[in-house]
Image (cartoon, rainbow, N blue to C red; front, side, top):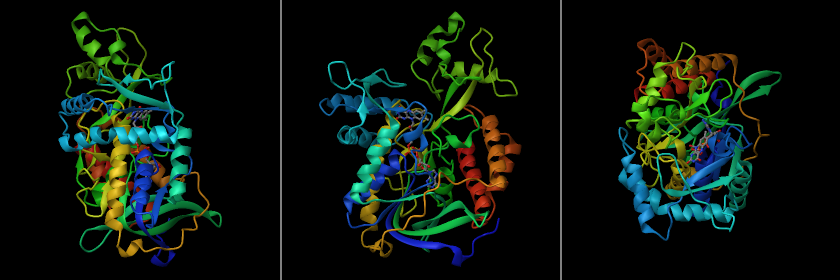
Length: 465
Ligand SMILES: Cc1cc2nc3c(=O)[nH]c(=O)nc-3n(C[C@H](O)[C@H](O)[C@H](O)COP(=O)(O)OP(=O)(O)OC[C@H]3O[C@@H](n4cnc5c(N)ncnc54)[C@H](O)[C@@H]3O)c2cc1C
């Protein structure tokens, strides 16, 4: 695979470049265009079809924490619960406050978009408790394709331009260290061979909404289309990460992949209280007493990574579900790197080590809207934002296929993460050394190698975070 020369690289200018077309990226692009209607807003993603955990997760439904606008106590309870769940990670009380404060407006938008919310027989919205929270404060909508279509239609009406078939492999910075665009890459067929197609996008501001780190694991249950590149890209642009080691993991039966809550297994009577507490949440907890049950199962794993509970129950394996950390942001989605904003599962600080079920969807919407609007304000008046003719998009690709070398690298990395990066584990020196050497490659190498470098950086952020 050869590196593209500068003259092979197409160029494009815009006001705001949003990377990733999940709930966070879609909401950010929407907010950017709404805040500055004349600004050119590009939404780049590898696939045109619904992708990622937002629009292609296997449940075909999402819950969203929705503290009522009519009861101030619900917002207070939500914030108190979120902060109590944070240790041993860190949550920023200001971000948690903003999450609760903006919730009613963001949830009202989902209703106005016509999403299929579950309702009581008599008509009112049905309310559910979420993982780690006994309060019935969450709403649930079904039909993720429908949700994707509703968001896409809203964005098209506003004039957001879609750039499908590309993934970001570098963030460009100016001499002052300010992010001013990204290099996007796609693998496409050229005269029977494969060549990376590259596109340099110059932007007044960039919003990272590339999802979380679960794609770094062999056993995973995130939606298809995730790349696992987000932490690596953010870190290589100098953005500080927070809570990167705290991923949510679920136990699934092996084979069959049916969800099993360890609280429902047979435990000695002395552990009954822990089992009851464990039934209150699906993901493995960090720092809570009931994580003892999960550690017991982890210790029972064989070399194949499968735990066979002695008192019966199906063989079980841990699957990576979603990250609770990401780029440290402020209340406007600003990362610690100028010109770079982040939202959704690649942003952190509004959740700690543990998070309530439904709080991530809320965070995607709240910080997507805030990051998009702030990025648009930043981009206004910037040279790259000057109007340009709409991008004549290439035919959308189903997603960038991988060349053999990067597929083999990814396979090895995923197997290593399954062995070294589960809750409570310390990575082996050999795995760390391998990751460090892969991450130490020089940037701007051929795209397949650059992809490997960024994946290794993402993985390092998780195992050393
Ligand atoms: C099965 C399942 C059920 C869940 N249920 C809930 C729930 O009920 N409530 C809740 O709050 N949370 C839930 N979650 C978590 C939540 O769905 C996700 O954390 C959230 O949807 C992530 O949204 P996002 O927009 O940040 O990322 P995603 O939806 O994952 O989207 C990421 C986007 O970025 C694109 N991308 C990746 N890399 C690049 C790149 N380099 N350049 C450009 N684009 C890129 C991807 O293709 C995709 O379009 C669930 C997760 C799973 C897996």
